[in-house]
Image (cartoon, rainbow, N blue to C red; front, side):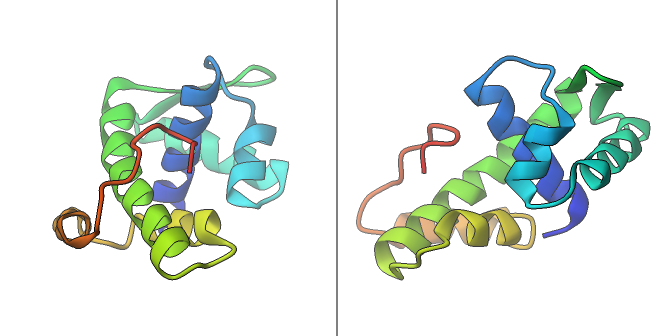
Length: 126
């Protein structure tokens, strides 16, 4: 997954679990990176207009960032469910986080159609 996609997805999940702004430490935990690395990436993403970052407070997705992250999240949920329920992988969440930005949304949609039942779309519950 591209760094941008992974961080957007992590921020989206964290915002759904709590209220923004989300600390860089929380994002770092979700993407398994250092807090310094997460802070730098969040600052870089702010210049792209997908989030706002306030030092010592955290990051908040913009409307454009939230829309992109919501699309990524749909793919993440599908992959997470597939990896857990079909492939019985232990690290299903981290694998799904890594791959969500690499899979075309049409592929994820088709996978959802082929799965025996649809995954629960609640952010962070997989």
